[in-house]
Image (cartoon, rainbow, N blue to C red; front, side, top):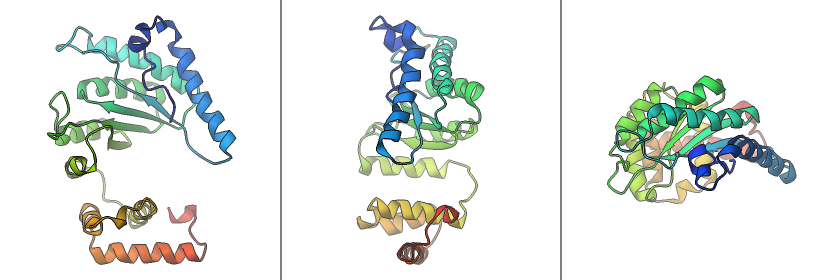
Length: 232
């Protein structure tokens, strides 16, 4: 992920560097590429875009058009450096992230878009948006990934994620996609937590027995060295 989260005109203006939007964003993608090369590993570069740091109308004085223009300027610079994806993160205002996504879709299609909102301990954003409202709006915008970040910890975030899943009208995942997701969660130690198998089974619409069956299949293939891109 690039270090361009706050590299928009409004935030840079506070430091007298608003004219360097393009420079900083291009450099952010280039540095991420250089870090990957130095690591000797294969990785994708997700170009980070965060909130503008100002209040949009009617709460504040910045118009939606001005917000769109600022996002467009930043995203145009990022796209020129050819990242593999765009990641919008830590947004609380659904209207603001909508302007960012609009700009991205006009400039960067078909680069994948990851859209992440942040929620408070009461389960809504600072602007009062519920997970259901967020999910439905982002699905309508046809982003590739909907997520949650920089919120209040896993215990409070889990109900938020469940509501987002329930209100995301994406097609049912295929068997191989479920296996890929379960393999990822297993690698991260998710199934070491009490009740995790039941929760994952419920969210994926499968039984506990099926989860264990997938885990056995993953382990058998791994032990035989058969896990490769064809299984994903």
